Length: 289
Length: 244
Image (cartoon, rainbow over all chains, first blue to last red; front, side):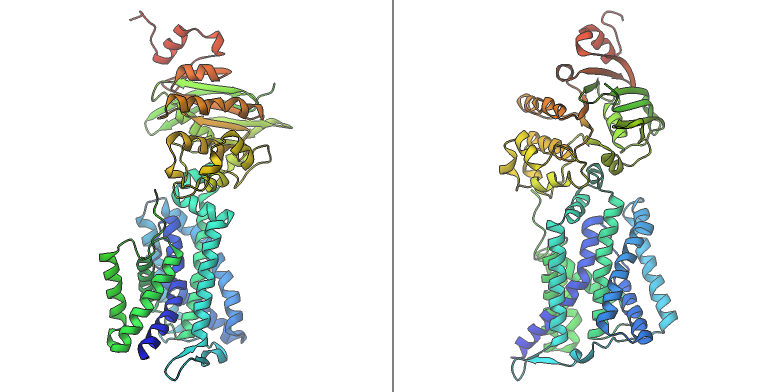
């Protein structure tokens, strides 16, 4: 029974990994940019929400409602103002630019908030749980996070496959110049992709802080989980990312049940195994003919 | 009839190489203008510059329409803005989006469409085989089918000027004929066509007016009926038969 519990807890944890990682997948899928500051931006969102909550007294829900759109706009501006320019120079400059942002954000947060970790209180939902049997209980907060992750990834998938702009994002990913020839401004389309990525990473950052806590230096380790979820699931596939996040969560929790020392190691081992045995990921994007 | 597209003294440089020198030509509404020339004469460069993919060093590209007597100077606009102004390019190599289906490729053509007669049903009428292939990936089509989709994609934006870059390249003669047969129907809807073509006889058959490019300059211009085979040969190769 404890193993069933470990698997279920892993599935729940995986939802958040996937929610966090889908922005990475999106930015890489559309622009071939690896955003090394992805985790740090999520942590930044959590700290800004922390300040918002502690100064105005709003609850977590309202903080998220405010933070997510602000970060989406912020993402658009980062893409138009910085990353688009960096992309003109090839693949390396955007990597360096996001690495620089990562250092900048971590140190600014250290300066502004000290090295302490902070948590966001989710309210009563944080301690309530659904009792399934004497040994298994599922936290309502974690169920809510998984539900949100499925909703957000499903929404993104629908937007990309059915939406007018979503279709243009895929077109620009195939051939940005040809996208220009049908009237799409690649710089604007890239801005939209980054806006979506920043909106989702802000939501994930707040949920990280609500589920446990974040500190100014926790961005890079979150980024590692995000990468692993994306690669395990298959690059460029959002449902794959959800599956990858869940696989990562389950591996960590099951190994942690056996011995807590193996929690993180099991996740990394799963990542390596997938890279060796199935490098295209569990659920790769439909093969191009 | 008034001019629709005017190219004025266009000079384009690829690094050290001057690809186009002082090229001027006009395209009237409903007209098919062909530019012929050997490999490297600057044909594709001309279309890519008009479409906004390459910057012009000197010269202007003007688009006239409706009450726009002085013309809109589009020379400095990027490709996506020129499309909105009414210039659409069917690029060399077709450049379909390989991971999108045929239908999705067509729909991208409507992303910033202008008002006009071309919509999905009209495109399906032009190429009757399209509907049954609509849900296949564009990369699964044959070259001729891809060319048709690229043409339809450009039409769905309802351009005022359609630029066609080497429609015949790499296609079987029967397929080329089928694609070219659609031109009169496109022009009948009021769209003007500026095409470049390596196949001279094909260009002469389809066009109302022909320009021959040699090393980036217009060497010869005129209506196909008014030009002799010797004139065209001389302009195409830059030598007169028996002159050397």
